[in-house]
Image (cartoon, rainbow, N blue to C red; front, side, top):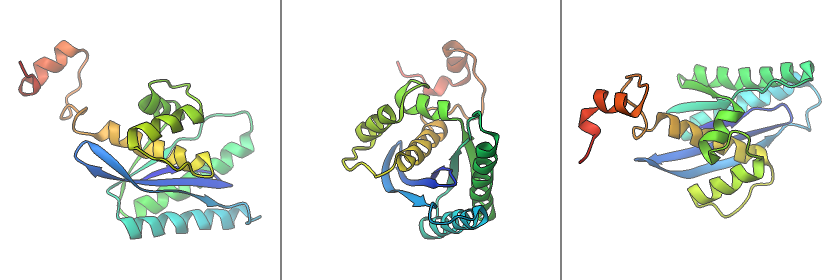
Length: 179
């Protein structure tokens, strides 16, 4: 499950893992602008995340970390939205992983400075999606979920062994080398 937190729009997406491949189960946005009270918005975020977890039973939860901007009030609000979503996931017993926007973009496009449209185009190509959602918040959440898949996929993990180079990888993983 991937979340792009926000106090006006919260993107959410769920992927189904099939070996090293993924298919999109859900990609959408929770619109919060009808609520004027920030605490009502936070309650809606918590409720939505809990509903999604109950309905889809994900085995992990990934969320985009807030980036540091100039507006301190916006950062505080975004941090609260992120905290409420994380609390819902932890309450359900899910492991939580946070990714920076740059890490998500790097994982999807190979460029940590890619714009939202570049990320969306790569998601379309990788996951074979045709229909673009109304808001990029949904595609951002999908990118977070796919980034998490890539980071936790068996194809790229090293059984907990830290490696410094390809030579080091080969020494620590001789059974994975094919001639």
